Image (cartoon, rainbow, N blue to C red):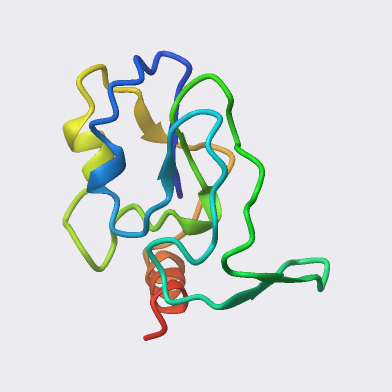
Amino acid sequence: MAIMITDECINCGACEPECPNTAIYEGGVEWTWAGGTSLKEVTLEDGTVVDGNAKQEPVSDEFYYIVTAKCTECNGFHEEPQCAAVCPVDCCVDDPDHRETEEELLAKKAYLHGE
C-alpha cells in the first residue's frame, strides 16, 4: 500500500526531504513524474503519454501530500517509510485505498528509477 498524509498535518515539512522517490510535496505545489525519478515520460492508464517534466495538479492545496503513484513505502531503500518515521504528529499513515504487495512496490521502485 502507499502512504498518505492525513489532514492532521501541521505542514512542518519534515517528511519531504526523506522521500527517496520525491513523492511528497507541499500543499498547493505542482508535482512532476520526473522529479526524483529517471522517468522521461509516463503512459497513463487511459493511454495518454505525459512528459515526465510536465507539471501536474497538486493533490492537496492545504497540507503536504504524497503522490500515490510514486510512493513505494521506501521499499528497496529503507526498512520502513521514512516519512512516517520522522513525522512529529504521526499523520503519515497507510492509505487504505491503495493496497500494494511488497513485490508490487519493488516493481514500482524499479520502474521509477529505471532499474
